[in-house]
Length: 280
Length: 338
Image (cartoon, rainbow over all chains, first blue to last red; front, side):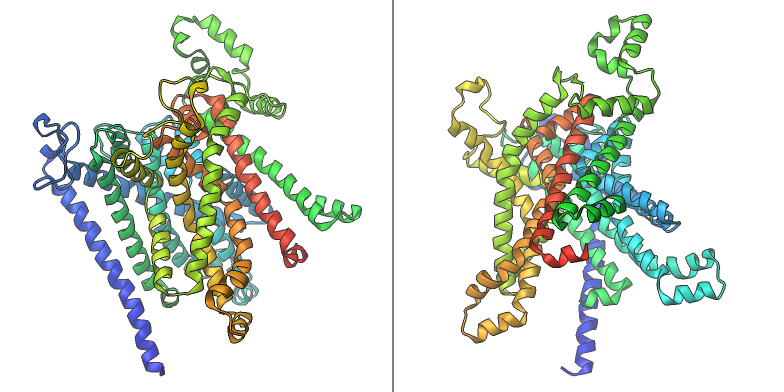
């Protein structure tokens, strides 16, 4: 293969990822807009239309109270994404802060390391239950539990990244030339950390969304007035024996599709931010 | 770490034993940290410990009696004192009383953990074996159709909620096909000694299947990568040159390279295994430790919640310890590095 064909193949691989990401973003955005634009009447109980299987007019069917499942699922998806974004933002910031703290000295590094190990030492779900309990339960507590528990892995990655940068020759030279810590942080550390942060953020997003769904599913923070995918599936669990399969299958399938879209967006973003990753 | 390392050097312990001692110390430290974290979180909860202790009876108790209860149980002491007291009791095996099960926490955890283990152990073995087999098949012919299907499967597994997969199994195999019971560990309405072994096994099948299917992903991907790497190595080329077939090379050479990393991954994945068990228990109404954790969190049973946090941290920690030990015991290069 000559050099030109090689470059072409590379651009194509990256271009494909970017295109996938764009398509996924459009799909997800379209679904959210559609959910937002749906008639609010569909979310209210209508007893004449209870427990209809999927069919024309009701692509997802209706639940035991005659509420349209598609409308409820899309509303739930909106909540899921919102919580996921919030949680990923919070956890990314915490990770950045802790990784920065770890650079202050050996003791600080040891403390941050211990904090990471302590939080990883518990099964994630148990940790989230503890945090949700500490905050008194409810929707807010679930959001906080998801937001406050996703930082350990990224903290580890960032810490290693920071360490590598700080011991790199050019940073040592910069120090010897008399540049202070603030300059090194701004000009050397952060530019290195930004792509890592962005990638860490998008990788965290699906985790956060799935964990929020799981935590809601097991019963923390279910609010009847506010549909969430986890809550919908928890409700469906009781009516599966009645043969109302769509209540259990379709909201979960929607969440799966959304997470796959996010993943597509993530790989598109990664291809855009760090071309070297994309070609591998 | 440096202290025990120096001590080990003076005593001239065998390196593996020294490593084990060091890791055990670290695990103990980690457990104390987990205990402190769990205790701090539980104390931060807006739950009045006296009310939680009394339950529904709280309405009939006057302020003097409340104060007496608080003093008797040490609720009026500062948090660090309470923590040290609780930790001391826990070290002696006394984790307190569970209010929702009306039994000692240690006993509840023991029973519930046994029930969870009945799910987790078969699922761990099945999922591990299946994951290893699939990874081996995928890695043997990198880029082939089987490889693509298996990678797609592992990829989908990371994107779907575990409890939803369990629900799908429930819908298909319990509701539609009627092959397995819909819920619980035993048929409802029967006394424990009336339940036959066959019935118990029948109730075990679906939850174990759900948990194994969930556990396949990481092992399969890891094994696949290791096998694919081995298949590109020089010794494999040499084996091919001697006329060995692809399946033979994969089974006799590549599988050995991938076996240890797969075992390590399996032992290091206890946290995910337990997390899967929590949601599987919820879907199939299985009376295990995961459901107990949910109940304890929802109904403010602080002693039980703390006990479960400690027990699961110990479970995860032991898994990690075994994973590291395995790597050390089998791979001498790791020992030299440490």
